[in-house]
Image 1 (cartoon, rainbow, N blue to C red):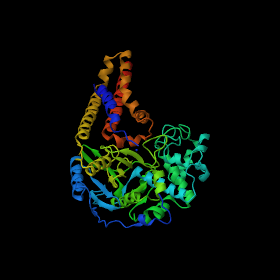
Image 2: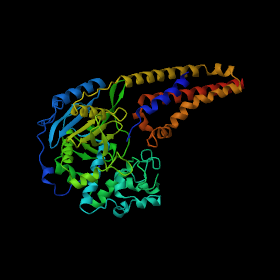
Image 3: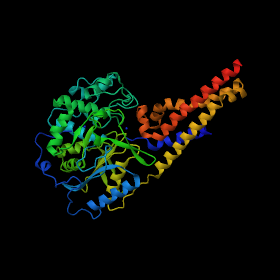
Image 4: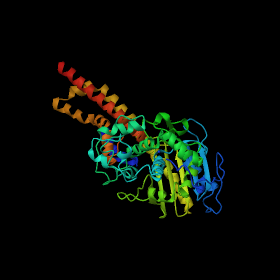
Length: 499
C-alpha cells in the first residue's frame, strides 16, 4: 500500500513546482534625461507621482503586500513602483534570512533579471562600434570554442536571444562541475556540443549570458563586476547594487528561505554559478532608478528598440527581455528571476510608463515575487489584486511528512519480522522483494526524471531538495527503509537456508 501511494504521489506532485525559465553598461556620456535625478527616496518608502491612479498609492501597495505576507508567511520582500520619470513607491517589508529589517536599500538577489543588465552592457559596446551584434562571437572572444564546429557561426545576438543552439539538453550546466569565473564558464564549453544549429531554435540557457558577460570583460578590458559598477550602477546612482559570481559571494541580505509546514525556513543557496546570467544584487530604490532609466531610452532610443524587439525564433523573448501582455491585455516587457531560495521580477508597461520591480526572499518553488508583481499590476490597472493561500503547500507537507513517518514505521516493522517472513516464503516468492527497490531507483534517477518532466532543463540532485523538500525527504526515507527491509529479509532467507 505504501509503495502504491508513493508511486501515485510521485507522479502527481513532481510537475507541480517545476521551475520556469533554477549581468550591464552605459555610454561614457549619458543623455541629460537619463542623468535627471529621481524624486527623493527614503529607506522605507518613496515619493508619490502626481496623477497616479487612485489604486496605485503607497498606502494601497503597503496594504496589498501586508495582506500577501499575512496569507503566505512571506518573510521579506522589497518593492518598487515607478511611472515615467518618477517614483510612485519604494519600500521593504519584513526580515532578511539573517534577521535584519528589509528596507528600500537592502541588497537582494535579482537572479535572471540580471540578463537585462548583461544585454545592455553588450549593447553599449555595440554603440561604440567595438562589438558587431550580428557578427560571430568568436571574432570578439577567440577563447569561445566548442566541440561542435557549428559554434563558430554563433552570433552575439544569438547569445542574447537564446538561439545560439546551446541548451541544457546538450550541455548540463547545473549538474556538471561548476566554474568559479566567467573565463572558466567559457572554458568548460570546449567539450560541449550544440542541441541545434545556431539561429534555428530557441532554448533558454544561462550559459549564453555567461559567454556574453565574458565578451564584455574581454572587449571592455576590465572584470565584469567593475564594468557594471563603472558604466551602469554609478552613472544611474544605483549605489547599493553590485554583482557576484557564485552562491558563496551572496551577502546575508540576499539569502533566502523555503517554506516547510507553512513556515519559512532560512537555508543557504545551493551551489551555483550566476556570473552574467543571474548574479546582480540590487535594492528597491536602485531598481526604481533602473526602471526609470528604461523609460528614458537608455542607452539610446535606437538601442532600446533593438533590445526589446522580439526574436525571430520566439515571439515572447527579445535580447535579455521577455515580452507579453497582462491579464487585461496590456503589453509589457520584463524579466523574471529565480534562485532556489529567492525570486525577483521586473515589468514595464510602455503604454502607461508604469514599472514594477519585486525581490522576495523565498525560492523558485513558491514564486512569491512573480505573484506580488501580478498583484501590483492589477492595482495599476484598477483591479483587485489576488492573494494566494498557503494552505495547499501546508497540506502537501502534512501528507508527505505523515507518509514519511509511516514509511519509517512500516520499515522498522518489516526489518523486525524479516526472519519470520523468510521462513514462510519459498525462493520464487522471495522475488517479490524486487518492487521494494523502486524508491531507491527513483531516488538515484531523479535528475533524468526531472529533465524529462521539465523538457530538458538541467538540475543537480541536491537542488531537487529545494524544489520539493518534503517529497525528497519522503523519497530518501523510503529508499533507505525499503532497502533495509530487502537486506534484512535476504539475510533472513540465507539464515533459514543454512538451518
